[in-house]
Image (cartoon, rainbow, N blue to C red; front, side):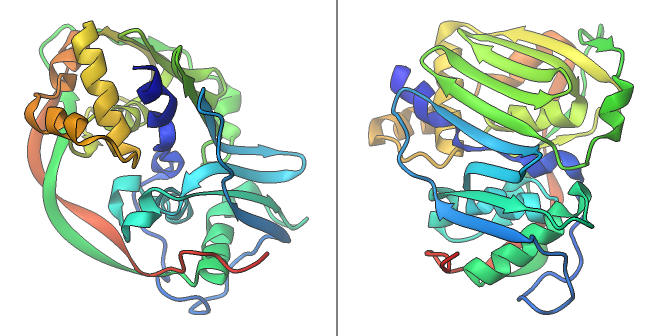
Length: 299
């Protein structure tokens, strides 16, 4: 279990909270004028200590920092889509990169996605196109009453933050912790999932780590909520195995066989909250990577 906990946390869909609409002008660089970083460093993530990882996106006075994200995750951030909506070569889901960038003095954080688009086109030679595809999903909906999520007051200051979510994801033998900032977070430790000040859409995004298909929030819940559910040790291990695979981790054949044959316990666990994961098929917008250099251009 310790090894799995250390490496399963690679999937970090920071962009998913920003909306589901695709940016215009998807394609090769130069199709439209775009905002650009003043200075940007993009490098492969160095090997990490096997006892834990810390990944994420943050802003500070020095600029923007991305640590340990895959190209697929960075593309999702740049185009304001969920990670599962981005399709590309296998390496785009496993090889990780660090970005440290300075914003121009006349810019703001809401322009970061467009700046990332320009950076990806320049360094990776990234080219993309869009298409729709019907695929199996879980719809997160209201289930049997009562609804067991606790609505909490929203922080007025949180509404003024940029649409691009700050956040870090850390984990190791003790469990997994996700900090969104503004008092919003979740932990999944020893079979206990505890979320603080989560919007329904963000909750659905985090549940996707442990699911066997994408999750679409259809609850129509508008507030922020504290949530908690428990799973038994066997189900906890099953969810960690699923998260390991979803993160892009190459797992032993024995673990893959277990994942292929076991029933995902997540839908049953969610019923503790008065919610339901309803399996259905839906038309989904996809962003397909047509071209990307595996080794980015020099800084």
